[in-house]
Image (cartoon, rainbow, N blue to C red; front, side):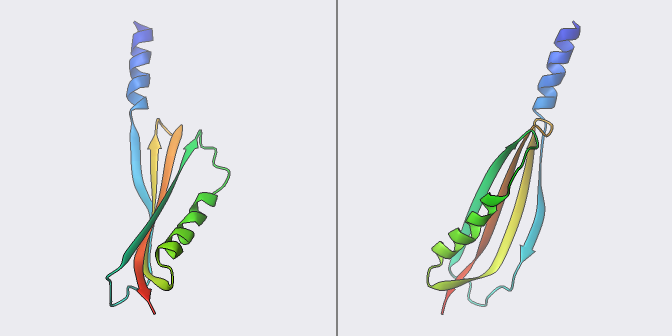
Amino acid sequence: MLHRIISQGMVVLGLVSCVHVQSVSLTQIPEKRTNKVTATTEKWIFFAANFDNDFVDKISEDLREKCSGGKVQGILTKDEYANYFIGLVVKRRITASGYCSKA
């Protein structure tokens, strides 16, 4: 009986998750907002062992590639943090979007 209660409790706790946005930033929005570009990167973190944040560097490269020959303005960044299984598994997703203006 005790074994069954503990097993059911582990299942319930394992299904619990929480998602929230940690930060949002915004730069000057241009007048002409016709060409929107977006880049997203994510990383799974197990047992709270995050040794680097290099995955974030990919976003600026992706935005530049999507706006070649132009300038990205009005950048909005979101840092989403999803906690699964009581902190044992965490997913971080960084999304940046802006407007490509060609000079």
